[in-house]
Every structure is written in structure tokens, then in C-alpha cells.
Image (cartoon, rainbow, N blue to C red; front, side, top):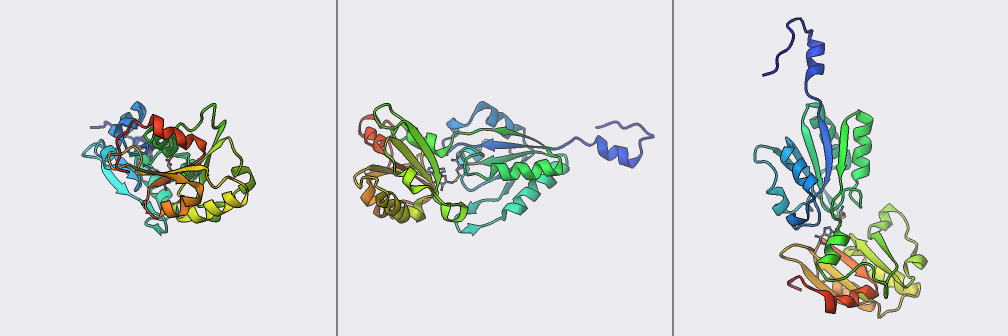
Length: 262
Ligand code: SAH
């Protein structure tokens, strides 16, 4: 029970209500063991959890049973809740004094529109914090035995959106260079284009490629092949899948440790 001074006018009573806040939390790629301690702490303190399609059931099971859950999941081409509305939900819940966790698959600042949501909170004057998560590139590479860099194979890594058609133009001559690892998020529907462009810009057709479906989970499947096979391989997997391209993929034959269904 809150005790308010008897003379407190209604306006001041409102301002005494606890201030809400939003934690933008990375849920990692699926395996709940990959959550950070801070993410777990935030999830268990939340009054409201606003989550995406990519957040695994295993992670959702860690949400307090009395917390409200709001699903705002988006499937490619099937935008359940428009971004604007998601922003509004976050602002409204926080304005009601709630402790809100905005839970996103992987890392919220990597192809997660986390930045856009924080901008909306900043405009509305809502307090926020960010808890990073393990992004799909890190999770999938670890659980498929494909190091993203290796002194003999790749000196840099590129995280690329396969939706570049909508989000901007990719620098194909740069992406076709050797000695780097390419990781395409949301690349399945563009696999044919990725194969075509990289080949056109000089990347060898026998460059190793891997597709990792449902990475880090019990249903993970991994398919490997060469660049010329990429578009055919993409027809065998479902979303969410990650595409890794580069000579590091060869290391999987020696370094794979995670039993999967591929
Ligand atoms: N913020 C997320 C990425 C969101 S974009 C992160 O940091 O991981 C969504 C894309 O991420 C999917 O289309 C897929 O390419 C990739 N992805 C996310 N989780 C994945 C998983 N468990 N296995 C394979 N790919 C995954």
C-alpha cells in the first residue's frame, strides 16, 4: 500500500506513480543456455514481455507466470504487427508504470530494429536500457563447428541482410573478395540472387557454403555445399536459417561437435 500525503492534489498523485521503463533484451538464437545473466534477471523482473517470433519457447518459459505476454511476431512478408504499433505498445506500457522487457531473438542491435524502437522511447521520454544477446551468426557458427574467422581462412566477417533489396544496395565487388566470411541473415528467399551476384563478381563457384536452420536448438539442421549449389540448398531449409559463405566452412568436417539432424 502506498501512503500519500492527504493534501496531495490529483496531479501530484499521478506523478508519484512508479515510472515505467523498457529493457531491450537479446534472447539469443534459441538455446536458453545462451541467455546472459542480465537478460535472465530482466526477464524475471518484467511485468510485461513484448516478444518476437524468433524468441524460443525455451526462453519464454523463463518469463514469470504472472507477467503479461504480448506477441508482436513478424514473419517475412507477413507483418503481424506494424513497427509503428510495436513502438506504441512499448511507450504505452511504460507510461502505465510497467517494467517492460522487449525481448528479441539474437542481439537486438543486429537486424532487429532495436535502434528504431529505442528512438521512439527516447522521443517519448521513457527510460530504457539494452542487454546484448548472442547473435545468430555467433550461435550458429559455434553450434555448427564453423569458426567465423581463422588465421588460415578469413581475416574479417561481414554480417549482411538478405533483404537488401528493400533496405539498400549491397556492395557486391567487396563481398566477392576472398579471405573473408559472409554471413547472410534473412537470405533464404534471395539465395539465387546471392549466388548469382557473388559468382558474377568473381567469387569462385566452389567456395564452401553452409545453411544452418534453427541454429543452437534441438532441431538444428546444417547443409553444406559449394557456391554453385546455394540456391538449390536453400530450397531444402526453412526459416529461420543463416547462410555462411567462405573457406571457413571446410573446418566443420573437423570441428563439428553438436549433434544435429542435417
Ligand atoms: N537480431 C537477430 C536477427 C534478426 S533477423 C540476431 O541477432 O540474431 C532474422 C534472421 O536471423 C533470420 O531470418 C535468420 O537468418 C537469422 N536467425 C535468427 N535466429 C536463427 C537461428 N536460430 N538459426 C538460424 N538463423 C537464425
